Image 1 (tube, rainbow, N blue to C red):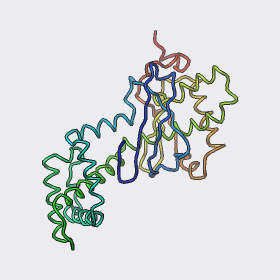
Image 2: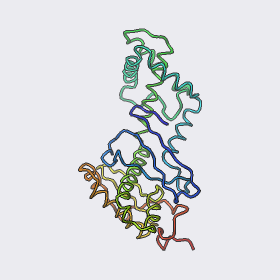
Image 3: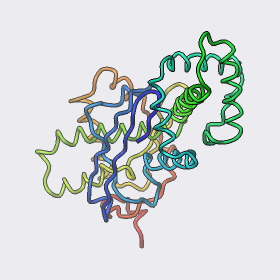
Image 4: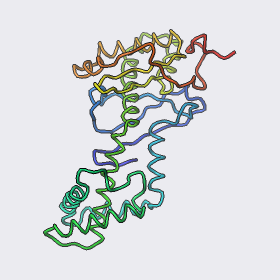
Length: 288
């Protein structure tokens, strides 16, 4: 579980011997961002459950990065800082530190190095400078431990904000939202599907066979098509997308989806994932 300044995000994954045989729902409690128009809060997201030859799941990647950055910080330290939030004046203390940090930073880059943990010497030096500057302008007094706790919480807040605005995070969230929309459309089509079609849709509703969207300067989303997918898979995806637009999309979502464009020359470089059945692969990409 990863706490940030905007909310909590928990990613739950289940293990399966074959990632394409089981559909796993990811519970996503993230607050909406600039792409919120494409995300339905009541719509669960479908993804594969097991390891992939293409990449780790986005949630696992972010959690691994987060753990590496904070591997020197015991869990009790995080809880200790959270407990000190209840000390009188801590909210005001964080506000003072935020202003002190802005003053010291000016119009330049961040003083903290968010790619490194809080315990890194360079970050500790910045923290002490920010605390000293804040204590000068503060109209109250508090012990050094409270100042350090407040600065640590402010560091975590800024670090989370920077991570959430990285292009890779936004790209992953758009891909997860696309899976969520298709899952909702799939539930509407479910009564009319045959058993064979149901098994095929289980393949379609996985992350490894979902194309990504690239954001351009004019806010247009350029879709990277998967060149190895068969016509049958492409038709199934189109059917899900059309069903969502007709039955569930809000006006805002329709405007957002209208910004998605496809170009024949813009394709994904991802190879065919392991476990994809033959019917989902174009003849030219089928092995042997």
